Length: 251
Image 1 (cartoon, one colour):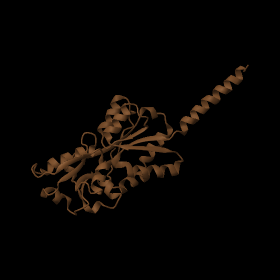
Image 2 (spheres, rainbow, N blue to C red):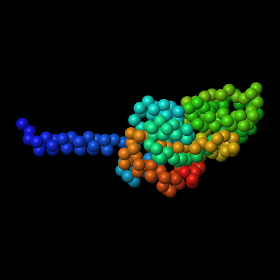
Image 3 (tube, rainbow, N blue to C red):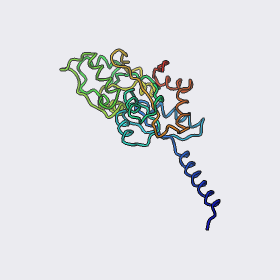
Image 4 (spheres, rainbow, N blue to C red):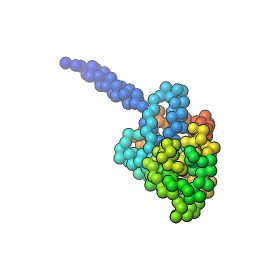
């Protein structure tokens, strides 16, 4: 029969084992698809320096938000807007005070077939135009605003092909399945294709303030706080800028 001291030792070992297992779990990040390439670079840099492990799940801002409110085990949420992170904060799912703008997105009109995508759109000769789903993807909502601002005649407006997210929008165009589409400028910068795109003026749509927020389940997770601190460092900001994003110095 075990004595009291032996039982206490076993309990402590068990607790330590659970704690160790929890700390060994990789940090889980949910990221809007437009930021997938930059976050991979940032995560690789951070893992090399810290020895921590992180896993990345990508999708449209709206779909990732739906997964989080339904209990998906993410620790940090990187949205392509400010609305969903604010909702999580208001619902008590996001940690108050942790929300911040990590990048300002830039929208581009791009084609594999012309150096003048805007002219191609306005000429009425383009049959199909790809945009991300405006209901779930902020870049898609911005694209709809641009079409209204351009006042493209409805009779000559190409058929809209709706992609699940901005990454799929890029694929539709890159594979030649769609002649033209609105994508994130960052996607083009990462592949050296920005010279064949029309940079949409900021005045044509609401600012694409991309915000991140710490999820409540990770509020005491030291690794999560350290990674967020890393993202606010001058080095991380420099990497984000290199992908074609703007940064809001006031946030």
